[in-house]
Image (cartoon, rainbow, N blue to C red; front, side, top):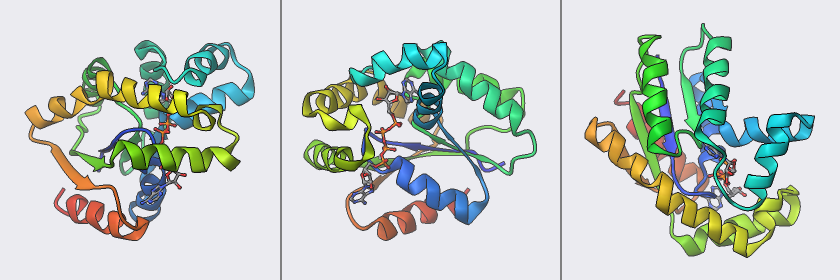
Length: 190
Ligand code: B4P
């Protein structure tokens, strides 16, 4: 199974590149951000709890996102592989993902990290906020909070995959096409 983690700060282009990867490789896209926004738009209890945290730029509790991922893995037993986008975002989530995949004998083959400067991230998210309707993209303070949450809680996840010799970092600044080529170069070695 081609199981890949696409990693990077908010606005690095994970969602953008995931779409292109699933088209090319026929993989299932698992974006915890999209799953949470789905819960919010359906008005579920989980969505209501998540919305408050997301609107403030904070992470949603680990057990919530781990439960969502576990359901999605079970619902896609015949998949050729998964792109994990925006997950894992904490070391606890990374450990839980390894345990879930161990039961399926289908480990993560690699993590590809998109490197983008904080200024560029802020500009991209504010631009998207103009027409996305996403409250977490509309406010510079919330964007800065998301970047801080990333640096404090998510950046250490890279070390988890480095220890397993599964980490590759690429430049996330450039055209969407150039970045996609660089990711595919890494993926072709798996
Ligand atoms: P996510 O939905 O994961 O969103 P993201 O980090 O904002 O976006 P991404 O990096 O995918 O950016 P994109 O490609 O869209 O998270 C939202 C919130 O959900 C989190 O803050 C958190 O509260 C919660 N959450 C999600 N997962 C969680 C978890 N596992 N644990 C706890 N909480 C969780 O690109 C952004 C913009 O840049 C787009 O407008 C795009 O067009 C543009 N862009 C992309 N590539 C570009 C390029 N090369 N050049 C110029 N612009 C580019």
